[in-house]
Length: 245
Image 1 (spheres, rainbow, N blue to C red):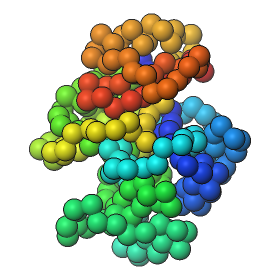
Image 2: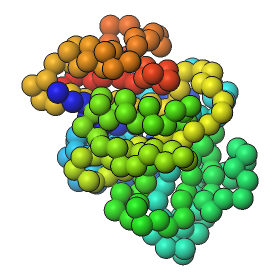
Image 3: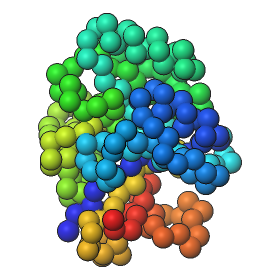
């Protein structure tokens, strides 16, 4: 039994507008745009497969108030591509921001709703990830978080170092999930979270029970009679277990 990372869910005040930004930013397609969700996928993508984590934007009323604990890191393939990517994103409506990063080799931007993300300088480890190099998660204990998520899913721990830990699909394709140590604690519900799916034939409720045994907990984020199960990992990051597909 194992779950699959299948999508990154982003809360948005205007999902349609923010979806257009991210579709243009990633070179993806808007495959669905309704009043309750906007879906983005690479062209020709066969959902769900590990070569990409697709994006699902959903409307919320509450505004963003603190730095997100989950953000996207975008890949670049050469110094020229890196500079061109930053300029292109600024032209789409991204803005440069200071979150205390100091002098770094990457650029920190915010999307039109203030969600932080990074454009990374060229790195060999991200040359085959697609436009999203990694989904980065702030945490207190990267090694423990990597163990939990590796046991929860079919993704494998790639490395654990002093400055963080990371996972990647056991198929060796697509983006990484990275855990970055930070001193500040989680304060509010995350505006960005993972959606997971069981494999066809596996039981959603049994998978939720398995994750609870690993340290996940039930949380109420206002959901009602939804077909998904909302849990939080050991550091209180919310995520959803969707039905098998």
